[in-house]
Image (cartoon, rainbow, N blue to C red; front, side, top):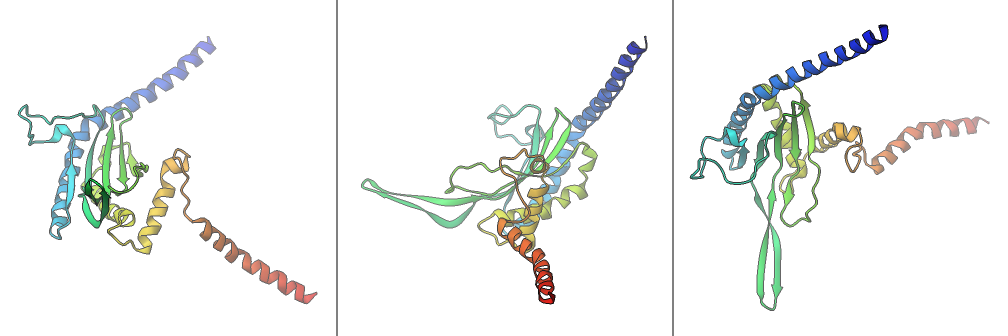
Length: 244
């Protein structure tokens, strides 16, 4: 009898946790469209500010949020993910001033180097009721096609976190991220260290989920740090040796 009661209590505790999680997911998934629209509004307002200095930012929203559709059927044509959705802010492609000229007996062809700037992605996954913020690296049309894992900058399991202030706070680090990865920008020393810290603190990095582990310091910097730390010890040993 006591054993049966123990089994019943174990499952009752599990059922309570499951119901609490289902309630949380249902609330997140139900409220996501409201917060997605808020993200679109913040990003569009920021794009207007950037355009004043002739910098073009493109805002992409979930298909179900779009008001203007160019299709005669009233919906965009294409393939769309069902369930999961995102709000995106990205830099428009820019000509780098470089390119590739190919000359053959049949003639010449030119391929210009266009850089697609960084992209900020606020991704909603209904399966676990999560909101993830990714920074996608800039890419060049002349570079070899090698997909780099985007940086997972932040995540939350509560859509209440997506306030206007929180969404706005994503913009400065996103701009810093673009300066580091873009061939058209010049990052500061602080930008570079921020990038290192973000990649190191990416929870996928700390749990070993990525193909390559990202360290804060380079091997050269680690060696230099080791020498600096060891130098006082060497000096002390030399001092002792001189006393003998």
